[in-house]
Image (cartoon, rainbow, N blue to C red; front, side, top):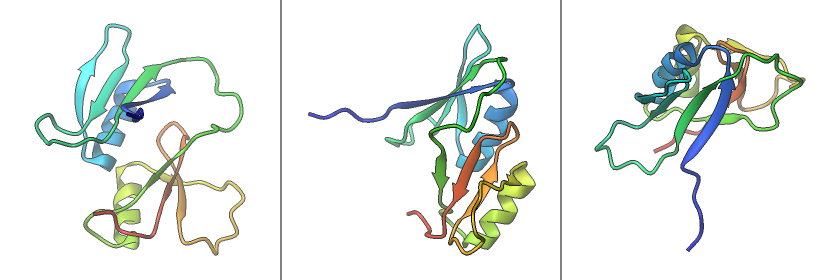
Length: 124
């Protein structure tokens, strides 16, 4: 048997704000709030989903350089342009990481500047 990813941890200055953002983006819910301020979000309990949870861990140290890991997301029920508008309305903003403009994806940043990409294909 192999391992599977069950949690992704993202250090941030405001776990509650990022939880709100990522819950909106991913249709997740808050599962747990730790005493240290960390917030775990994931698919609603009982959904039967095997998707990993996201732990937003409080860290007030300044970020040093770009992250070596980023999220790619796909719309599930609309086209890429409509999803882009939804993500921007939720608080994402365009990010420039040196792309040419010809890519079939959009590079965005969450409210704390963590880059992620909105891909063209629709996920099922």
